[in-house]
Image 1 (cartoon, rainbow, N blue to C red):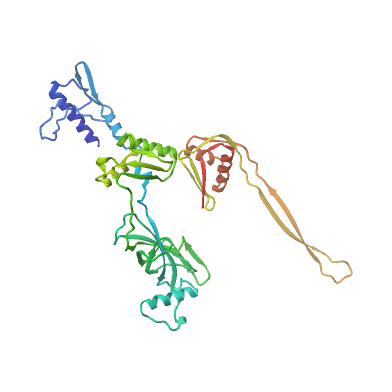
Image 2 (image 1 turned 90 degrees about the horizontal axis):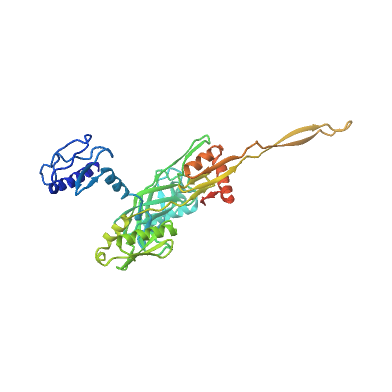
Length: 429
């Protein structure tokens, strides 16, 4: 990019030199170079190029006014043109969405890690009968080599017949692992079932984990061996009709709705396509009117619209997953100055048995009495100042307290209740 900017500046002053005569003197730090323009003519060697980041410029006096082209400004404008977030990363076009399709299939070829239920045996029988093999004795079937699984996929928008898509495979019953399994031909239908088959899935199941058992009872497991994936495992057989526009307007759906984002996107669209081209219907929907000259090529219009960039402030959000102890602090999170003390209360209960002798001159056995001691330990803690104007400062302040993730979750909730946390808390999991 640096070379392109240099050539643009050089060509500009070469044209100016033609009209006004010799160029003014240049700083010695700039080198004189002879470059060739697009026409193959040699440019004036006295025309100086930008050479270095902001350390050199070329100039010319026109009627007592010195015109200066600073390459660093051109460089700055080039970077500013790419600032912000593209609309395609913020919005979806209504109607251009995927659809979930599901089915129930049979995974075969397992090494004794399949289902141990009668339903798996019945599923084997039905599959074999579909291929013309009649089973008279169900006891001859080994259910441990097969597993009944749920198969699902996302049918992308505008997917045509013959398109391949990825599918997910998850065990339904008590299979231990799907390792080495092969999914038999499975029909995938839309929500609510129905007779329409939108895709057919089959293929080897790829796992992200394993489950190993030994004869001594020791087992090793990594991730979830009962859920897998088949890349490109389904072929689309039926297209889903989609309508994204009536020819005159379309609707943009904001992925993270907010009034600020809707207003910012509307302003950018009106600047690009004229006043009144876009109007925000809510914090999550924007109606866009397609200019008349663009209505003949709507795809090109949407492609150009998606490349427009919008300055949107990220939401101030703290995402908490109490099940896994995960905390994600957004970039816009701020903590007002406050004092925090957090301590753990430890309760230790111990029991000791004491034998009480029986009464003298009796045949009674000694009595065993259990004595319980309760000890409560609470470490001394002191108030620590906590504040921050960015996610990094908030993390640095909380790390000084040397807390576990679950302790941090409790502190974030307490900060929010006290009004010191300028952010929304979202709980997942």
